[in-house]
Length: 330
Image (tube, rainbow, N blue to C red; front, side, top):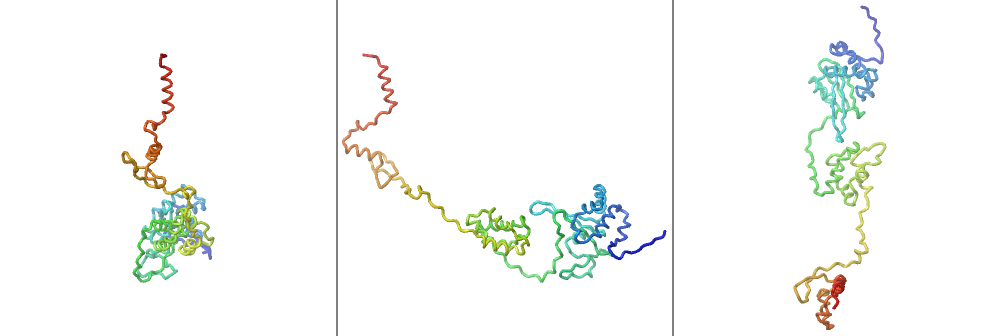
């Protein structure tokens, strides 16, 4: 067999013989792996299924190719559930076989390989080595967020003793305000606060609650109309809004006309009149109840006991008239 090969100068993808000659990868899996490996950096945020669609691959063929890649360690997936309950899938596609531990290390940006590889410097990442293979070309995709995983953190300085945290407050308004501030990240991730940061702003937010603002209104005041350029510092932004938009304190409610002119009702006092001991509610400074005062007035006017008899009711008079009409004539 004769061969005539002209190496391209640009726009080419280097594929290892281990992928091309892999006995357990079908043609669709190899084509999908090579296609994703040659994508530019800005196109790696799409999930693997969309790349298969761009290649014109049918769903059944894509699922078979995906199973081959997963079984042979070329494709790894992780599913996470956010605080709001949404599920996110992160995919890592490699041109060499990786174990689960190696794939997780590559996902988190942790360098692995031979002991002679030193610690990475700030802002740079050294290629991961797996045996004698070339550096890994990976495609990270997320079905809900276009952003790839966070970059590898810079080397940590020498360990320092953490400052003691402030004890939590026992004020119910402060506790409610602190929980509200910590929950703002579920509404907008730019408003993510640490525990100390939220505790430092809790007193200012509690003042809103003391002035009659509900928790829902406070949340709206802190999260509505965010800057178009984004929030650079969540602590500074929230402190500014809590200070500038602080509402006026509530004034005490004015008493109604009835409450303003109605005197305080006196307590019950014991009547000084004759008979069994009984109590009444005086209107002024009287010492006898109404019945005792009427009895004293009758006695002062010379009215006898028979004349003080109560006037019969209309029912009694009607019964008397009916009884007289029914009596036989004499």
